[in-house]
Image (cartoon, rainbow, N blue to C red; front, side):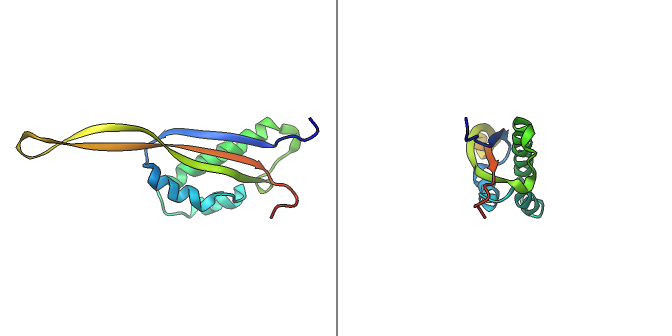
Amino acid sequence: MAEENFEAKATQKHLRRAPRKVRLVVDAVREDRVDKALKKLEFTNKAAAAEVAKVVMSAAANIRDKFQEARLDNQDLYIKEIYANEGATLKRIQPAAMGSAHQIRKRTSHVTVVVAKKEEFDN
């Protein structure tokens, strides 16, 4: 146990945004420092940016809670992994002409963030 693995994970499930739209935001902050990623998300003009920021803050809080003796700050942490997978799809019906109906698929996302301690030799 000489080498400790400083990383923690946070997951947001059933986010009511399409994964295709969430991935645009997620790709912008991949492998950034946590403080830099949160600042970038604050000024991103996408609806999913606020939700992704919450998950990043939760992962940072999880690693601080897990390793309390290490005194980790947002500058010491970076986003090791971040991805948005497809969640359950809510199926709804839109009435259409002549008694027919069109199906509406309301997609959801699962956002997962893994943060880790930044090593001294990393940029």
